Image (cartoon, rainbow, N blue to C red; front, side, top):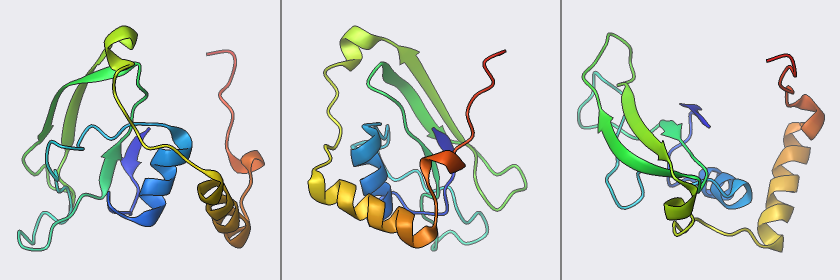
Length: 122
């Protein structure tokens, strides 16, 4: 899962997402990779994210030079390697995490039905 999530890597909601999804953040232990804001070098933080399953391992991660956006591009190369990747450790959710996620979902008025389903033709 990747994108500009308008949420920093260390926020409670990003950690909650990582716990419940089981997805890994390839930046962990490798640096901040601040992608926003291009114009303010002293005020930058990681708003753009890529999370992957344990089936993948990181080859490389690099913040690229500005391309005219207010965000820097982030280049990440992954390899599909389920055997090697199985040794990667992510965060684990507990009952309190699931309760917190439900509380947030209820407060925002969203449900699983709001998530688009892939078209099976593709």
